[in-house]
Image (tube, rainbow, N blue to C red; front, side, top):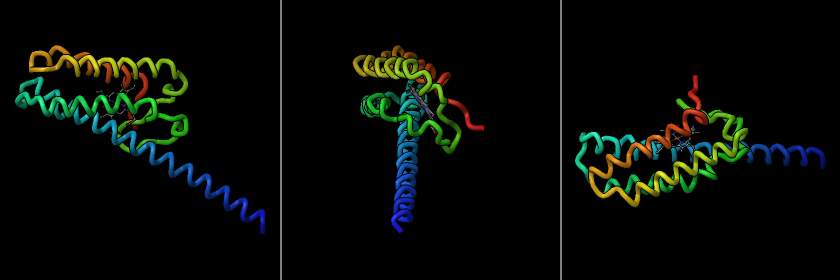
Length: 149
Ligand code: HEC
């Protein structure tokens, strides 16, 4: 009887771990989607002149990017290494196998965002600072993000 209880307890515990992993994956994915929206839905169209420049919207988008930069060190814990993300993109195992390289990309991103936040005041400064942000996204994606087949 005791053994059954222990086994059931262990099962529950491992189910708990799976649920926790799924929660992390979901919030990581939501954060990345919000990041994509801030860049692709707000900053890029303004920069291209498809949307009028709007400082409040720019500030909001930069706040989202800053939030992502702050959360990044917690967004990819080792416990999700083998979890498959649903949708178009997945994590590369290199995030954990090359943790120093990944951290360098996280730092580059955080720096690009804080530089931009200090400088973007109008359309010209948006145009001047946008490329560094975009580069810091793709700089990480090209190595640490993979496409789901
Ligand atoms: C330090 C690494 C890193 C940086 C910097 C980074 N990303 Fe990501 N991104 C990832 C990884 C890993 C994934 C795959 C896991 C996922 O989908 O969440 C991803 C996924 C995404 C996705 C797909 C989300 C989904 O599941 O549909 C979008 C959109 C995205 N990133 C946008 C951005 C934008 C825009 C920036 C820059 C402003 C950025 N990312 C910066 C690592 C990064």
